[in-house]
Length: 491
Image 1: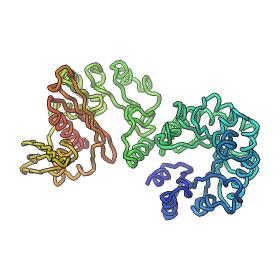
Image 2 (image 1 turned 180 degrees about the vertical axis):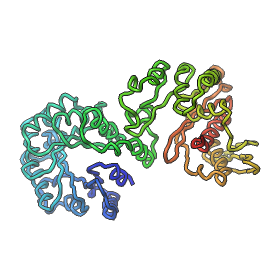
Image 3 (image 1 turned 90 degrees about the vertical axis):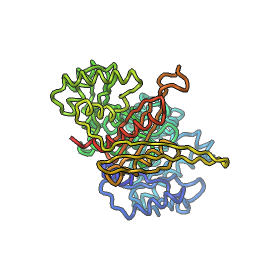
Image 4 (image 1 turned 180 degrees about the horizontal axis):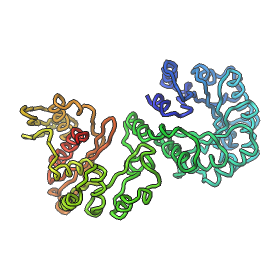
């Protein structure tokens, strides 16, 4: 599913795994052969032949051919430290391993990408030998020599200088592969591209071992909007946020709110002065229009953000008679925040608050009562149940739900009560749950704030509840999350 999404997005190469390493990767390539890719070319990944083994007899190289991909990516050693200490072979044999493998794959009609592992560390230790390894791949007919900052410890100036040096000595096209171990994965990739590389490897959302690979969700818009490279079509780049969230969802991980370009907070504004300036001219506090990457502008509401933020939210909702309304909303927000509410991460609760003050809020259901029980047996087993009784129109629904805890059980019972009346609720699910003590000096009687994050196929939203009772605070946030889902498309 990720490969198909990336193909529709328009990327040029998708590296599907190492067919020699595990059955799952072999299965991926078998399944991929049944699909038709319109834009991307699939690549199988592997290494150069083993030392002292003829390339034709190397099982790992044979499996690369059996993957039947148009592209094969292989890695080999640049750094003499690895040649001597890891491979335990001679510098000459390492050069032969590189050249033999590239030539063998080219003879079998493959488009070959050579990943020069530890390219920058190797060059810094011995420039002449590092260059010789890259030239060995070039002489064998490689299509791309990719310089890899495998340990992720290089600086942009070093990457730029070494890439420029390679560009001056090689005729093969150059690529760049960076890691984020010192927080410079994207910066290093851009530095290499400025210095002459034309191929960049990375991952959606920056996933990868240790601190991750260069984040393509940051690299792509930087190339398109800041460096003016022709990367993907504007229409495709406008789906970038959707692609990022799709991969988060498939990986069962929560989106990173502060990720550049595609994060929920990337174009979020809190300071009243900033929002006032934005209402007059969007360029004042935004480096690009968020719509260019499929994201949206958000105005965070708090007791400190002032009337400008609320006015901006009302304008965004196309509410025209907003001055008097904004004063009412700001007063109510300040009252609620004094009680412990916060709306910065609870945009959906704020939206419902505005509807209530405007008099346009129509609840989808009415609570008659709820209860929860937690039973622990001497076997150690925990049984959690929740009972919810609702009035939905003229109907009374009385449901029991089970879960891993009381909130999970309440969610289950609420969904059972509503799903036949509001089928859209099947599309949403909770992705995060946070509890914060508001007035810790009150001890166990302290008020708590619960933030729930929910999502459906298109959107992510947050809701808030506050009470001395953690179950009641959770219920408030839970109800808001459901009400917002049911009402978000209602005028």
